[in-house]
Length: 70
Image 1: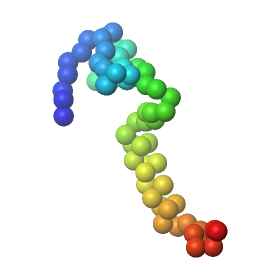
Image 2 (image 1 turned 90 degrees about the horizontal axis):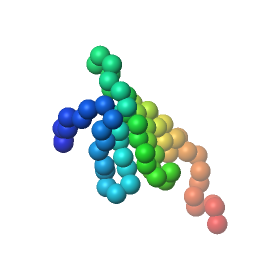
Image 3 (image 1 turned 30 degrees about the horizontal axis):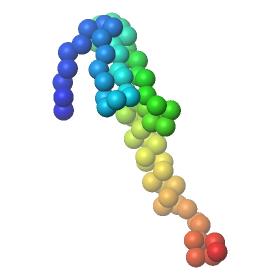
Image 4 (image 1 turned 90 degrees about the vertical axis):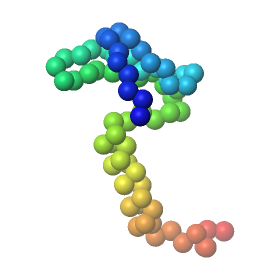
């Protein structure tokens, strides 16, 4: 893990096209702004994990018989 110290208004770049900017700091909370291409999903980690879990459950519970599709 890379740990960085940034001040309000400063940014970091991930690759050539993802920019993360510190918008504000209040107590223990940091507000971040993220600029990324539309084809890259940006989620809070807990939401990302929930999406993965729901997708895995849907795949397991799928009643699609792929042998009869063609």
